[in-house]
Length: 64
Figure 1 (cartoon, rainbow, N blue to C red):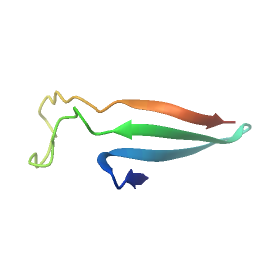
Figure 2: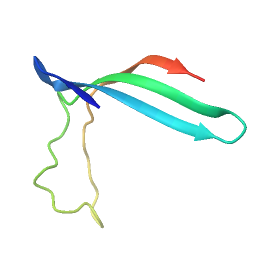
Figure 3: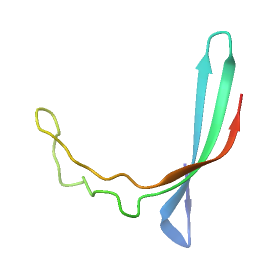
């Protein structure tokens, strides 16, 4: 994960997975926490319904 110094709510995120028979798959996302629910004050979500908004994300690069 890489944060942008001029936009602290924006990140580049690298996702790497491995699937037997297919090998590695890599995705690079441009994502933001802008508009996401702040969950820092919640001790635990166990046993309670949680309604949260997530930030937006878009795949920039995908390899197989």
